[in-house]
Amino acid sequence: MSASVSSPSLHQLRARHPLLVVALAAVAWWLVYRQLEPLSFAIVGRLPLAPESHLAGALQFFLYDAPKVLLLLTGVVFLMGVVHTFVSPEKTRSLLAGRRVGVGNAMAALLGVVTPFCSCSAVPLFIGFLQAGVPLGVTFSFLIAAPMVNEVALGLLFSLFGWRIALLYLAMGLLVALVAGVVIGALGLEGWLEGWVRELQAAPVVAGHAVGQAWTWSERVDSGVAHVRDIVGRVWPWIVGGVAVGAGIHGFVPQDFLAAFMGRDAWWAVPAAVLVGVPLYTNAAGVIPIVQALLAKGAALGTVLAFMMSVIALSAPELIILRKVLQPRLIAVFVGVVTTGILLVGFAFNHLL
Image (cartoon, rainbow, N blue to C red; front, side, top):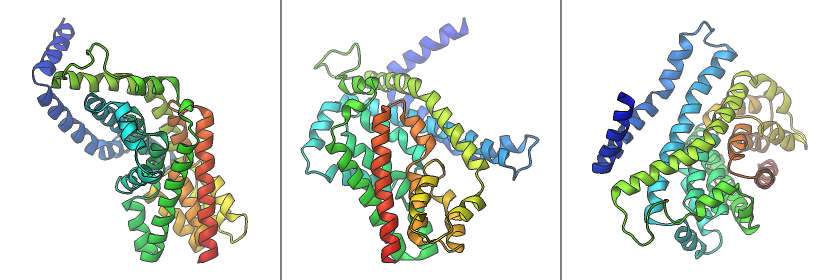
């Protein structure tokens, strides 16, 4: 009986005071988000596991990253659902389509620089951009740049190697994101999105809202909630599965093995570094210890940076999550284009430095 009463009352509150409900939800979202990392350590600390064990590290990673990505997805999708009531996907596409080739890609790549996301955390914004009607190539420029070229990566590179290497990495990373996005956009692969994504982009209004009728804030909030139920409801199992794979890799792949395998200065070192890096998963801060170990063992800088780019721009968990949004052939094009760019960056660094 209480459940049947509480649900209508919540709906009535949202109908009467939609902005108040959104503000309270945003505060709750922020408080929960801030506590995810300490809570994950606290939970693992209460388990009968050695704190430095591989299993403890994998569990902590999963307990932190899975809810983090789900919270980011929920927030972004809700926001895009509200934005959808102001600016339709078709209008967004027409605005960006009117720009010169590469301008939208450059804007998206630069946005990625100031968003300190790992590859999985960037996926919610990628989905939100698609939901808002942003062209496919532009969304890919963001997806590539956000994990690979952000202030965390640049700060660490500057502190370890100086401003010259940090600026070169910034330029090369932005170039990869820009060119890969332009290439993917020029190929016209929108038909390779999953059907439900194309249907979402084509939907002009939320069901039940008359065309041309002014939106109330209650209806705008309802639109955001409807988008969350639809998109998060479809994608969350893939997110949990992808993060689980990443947690296993994060906890059980030894850094010494990677350092020994790639700490060689040979022509095949760059392709080998990329092939080993693509299946792995970590963020810029997590890969720096591996970078230091590789350099200490005599690996060429281009080889190390190619490895770093492949680990944080392409990862098995990211591809698992993207599978719910993209068809396999589009994922293959994405991986192929980005991998080619990373290889070129690695060889260029080894040749120039």
